[in-house]
Image (tube, rainbow over all chains, first blue to last red):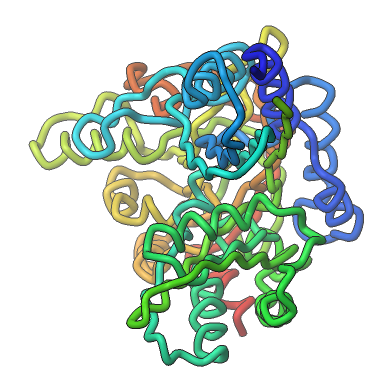
Length: 272
Length: 166
């Protein structure tokens, strides 16, 4: 059995780190960037780490991706453990409660940033892997699902994605991390696009065809010249990550998910 | 802030009062306006910042930064009719918003995104002036010092995002 407290402690620590510390890729971007607001962005990284104030006021909707080995035993449902971690972190830190309960009628705030989003995947063995995104609303509004024809060419697919980033990318707080889900059913495609956002920036798709497609998309998106905050200076995207799944003969679902320049995420592994 | 002097692309360091509000508060204002009822605070002469702050600490006001302005375009004419001089947010807006800036002679400015800890240090005072029940989405009046801004759309309707697209 994996001790509940060890999961709680490590998730809580990782959520705080994601909200207050830049990863290496973002730091490298800031080192190179000399466009508008560059001084305050550098200052922000220092103030956030020292003061515990979050890097961004939108401290997100927390999305978890859990890979659960079939021999893993927990003391309570994983959804409860993860929501407890989120509740503890967001109640005890100067973050923002950004979740409303009813989406259309009342939109009253839940007051502790729960519930979080949870996707679980089953696998063989004793390993429990928990990935998460701290997902801001601005980048989330750029999510798209395209139900393409199964006879779509690679060029048409690329044009569809690039056009969407051209039209909307500036308001997702670029430089962006781009996740693409190809195949599956409509909802699997969307989930894959989010899962792709949890991948390390410098890790390519293991299939050379999709690794090349990631490169091609990144190249075309960066040639748009959107830049930091859409102001034309600095890169437009850090990376493009593609995840795929089998699909129906009549369909080709393609999903686009976008993460902002802070790319707040984490990966934790436990063994039972 | 003298709107007439602002030019598209200009960088500013603003010191003064700003009204903070976003989606939910503007929805309530629109409902009041549709029912011909008075608004709970004055908008005449104000600068509106589209934002919702995080929680404060003992030492500091809460982290704050711009939210996506295009979501607020449907409320922009209402704000201008009420006398709002300029809005602050992030991202390219609709053609409607740009033409409203030109028609009313008002401006749209950008604040840096992903710089919320830094921006909170430039707040000198903060008070809730309406809709406290909305939590982070309440209406606040803040006083800021050396707040970094860029003029995205000026009173002539010149827009930085259209210029960047060539």
